[in-house]
Length: 376
Image (tube, rainbow, N blue to C red; front, side, top):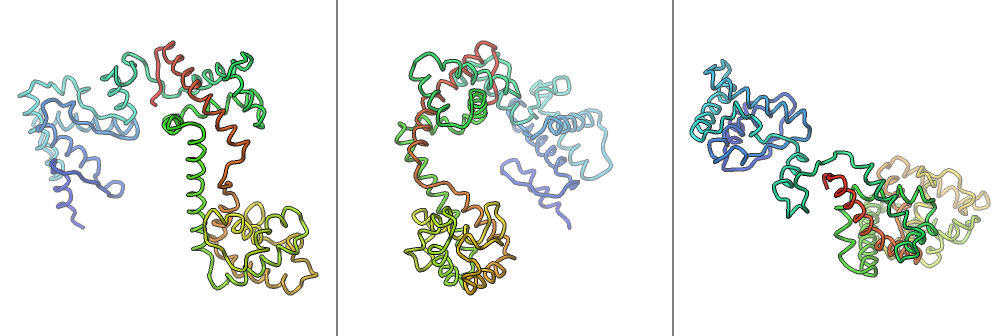
């Protein structure tokens, strides 16, 4: 397959492209050619950024650009047509280099080919006021020690009798962790603080509760829609009848409670959060707690005393057992949260809203003390 036209098009610097090709097809060479093609169009080489995921890839790409410039400076014309294109682009780049006095071969660090994190750090140091005054600060790749220390400093305020210590006590009372567990929980939140801070400060505690419940309902509706699409419609009536039977004859208290919605239902309800309990019942009927297809049927109302219904359920499970996507959808529904937060969870959320700004504040103080920052 001749892709020369696509390669030539991708070097058009007036347009943007996504290049998809298998390994070993010359994507890096194409990127180098585009980088060299851009150099004659800028006033300084720092106007061009090439971003990679790893330092190794960045070093390789920078090295190949420099090698191309060296070959151009040495007038070492390659034999291969494709590399000759790189050579010709390098000559044009060198002409601009000479005209502007860039001295790229003597100052290769002016070629901005680096990782995304390195680019972010460079940008932050250029804008000390907008970036919170971090100019001159060192950036740590692994700030886990600082996250842990910030959490420890916050938890150490437990005995001070303040609103903050009250919030800490509330977390300890409601949670299943001790002081060390609380420190670990808080420290694990800091690496993702850019995700939750904007929501935390977007409104008061009641508004945050409402936002969280709305998001939970959307999640539930989405997962129930998936389950509904995976459930074969020809089994709907049989499934509803078996669920009604289970709602009246389950012998295990937990199962009886879970089948309770089917005492009033005669068919599958709409797939929305208002009917989550009824859809959970389907998972209770067909799956074990670990997500496998159910084999023990006695405690859910299908003992040998109900031989006919028992055979019908066994047959239904056999008919569905080869549908792995259905089993996974049922298991996901089994694990969905309730659409409305319990009062204890609302109290925990309010406590966290009091604590987390102070947690971020402790981290910022540590950054100032040590003249360092993380990438966030």
